[in-house]
Image (cartoon, rainbow, N blue to C red):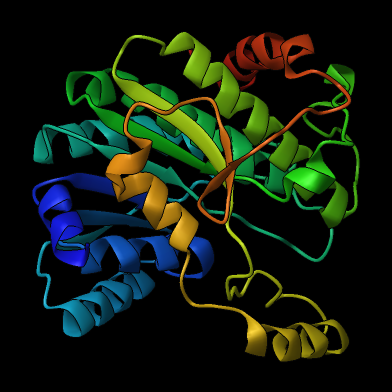
Length: 286
């Protein structure tokens, strides 16, 4: 099975955001093991280089690279995409995983609430800007990490509150961004129907992360202790990016490598299309 998957991923180009830690790093490491050409997106060149060095040492796959991009500054995404196009003429997998979790409300240089801006909107801009490359490289796949479907199904989005315009608890902002990502994934699938590009969202499971590193020690200690039982792998993310079993499957929510039934109390159709158009307005996309 492993050899067949390696053959499947040979020469497949994968772009992974948040590739230096948490879910992104776990997915990048798994795809590197499978022989893919993996490009991780990192805010820090130092951390990006260290991650790539570690991947190459552990897997022997030299086709692993990093490129720097600060997702808090969406105005830099077009230049990043332009450079990526020049260097890599195809893109088979786009895995959107990068996230921030500040201890209190923060805003980006553009005045946007940071969690919503980075976790959702920056990935909206990046994905939107790469759609034609994904289409020309089809069959290709878009992966969007979200959260637990059993929790997200109770959430509601009020477009008047999006993005958050006043201080909001980090957990609430993260929840709103996760809901937006699910709606985005489904709306992507609808708009990409027949293009050969699939879009799915997934719950990553318990993966070790450093998202709480800026929190007070009294909060970090129990989280660190709990993460003793967490994994450094993200099998569901790697599965969605590589397995032939999900070829052509789109508009689904995955957990533990299985499709789960997701029927939110507020139907996605009620706001997904509007969220798409509003996201273009918020980010200045034409």
